[in-house]
Image 1 (cartoon, rainbow, N blue to C red):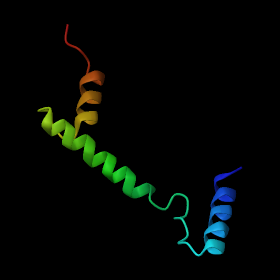
Image 2 (tube, helix red, strand yellow):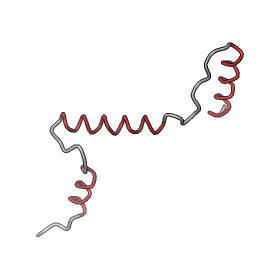
Image 3 (cartoon, rainbow, N blue to C red):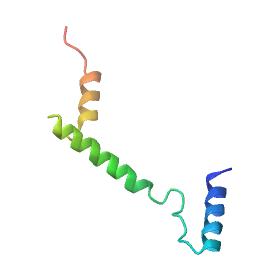
Length: 68
């Protein structure tokens, strides 16, 4: 059963029972991603690492030609 079919089944069941409908699939995805980003930044600060630019800094360090 796909996500859409499950959502439609749950919506129908909620309507029949007089309960509030469930949120549509994917409705809260952006909020979840923002919370995940904020949590990773918070954990970095608590650990004493920079909160922003860590990936770019690591890539620059990795891709930089090494001096002999």
